[in-house]
Length: 463
Image (cartoon, rainbow, N blue to C red):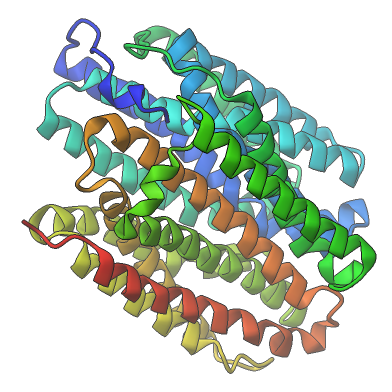
């Protein structure tokens, strides 16, 4: 989301019912993007069997989507400010829907990964642009705050509901149904947008930073690619060393370009604020923990324990319940006492959930697994609202939009890194060896929770 997304002059006032209808339509798109980031996880073993793909290939099925979306979130907000938010939003829905259709019909892993990347392009036009539409439609600050609280709740619910939805669809119709599911939702969203969502633009459109965009995409793709392929090619092989050098060069080039531009893709000056830096890293850590949990538990339950996709998805219901109940509660706490207390709760519950599974074995009790999922879900639910508050707290409106966009990007980076690291831990492991192979991953989940306690210390106290 661009800076002007939060500072643009609002359109003609809408009725209260129309404003909340706009929120509902935009939240539907947010739910679709969030579900699609996690719905595929529970179907990865079935996709692997259907397309004869190994663990590393399956990692790309998830990360092709998240890396592309992460790299384009900020520029999509700028395009929406320039050409119209509703217009870009509708294009995003169309691209997302058509790519979902190709995913559902994909004859090979390569086609599926390519279509997932195109899905990521469409998704990048939905999340930040939809939030900008909501902010523009609700000029009253108190009403806007309530709307953003609903938005955060939908976001948490969508990420946690993905595995449950995916398990049910796969059990009934097979793995391709995970992608067919998107098509009618997109058609409904397109109709609702045409009927209810007004057009809006930024007060002053930002210039596009194409060199910065290209370099950011290269940095993210190289980083995630090395994490996924490193175990296969060797961490000290010539190919890996070349990748490290290219990543360092692209990162240096990105910083150099951004510091010299009048309107950079990323405002690097924000990184001089310790609360902002810790919030961005905290958002990354939360999504590393969530996505490591989803991938490791999916592979463990289906391959080591022989569970069906439906049973695996159902096992994540405590995680979905914890996230759904605690996300709105977290928003209330942030408003009353500031971000520190919910961040402490998020860190404590996430750490406890990871520690529950550090000793995971082939015969670990189901009750212990479900308890761990509940704790991690509660941690995830408490985390999002205070992290966003910490990132933008104390900033003028002219910089809050970019700060929020960077935080959103860091969440998607966390998804990609979590999948890559988790996949690297279990790649090639036989079913009997999977429980032991996942144990370092649960330590990483616990470490992410502990880092949230550091973020809590850096958060601004309630004035």
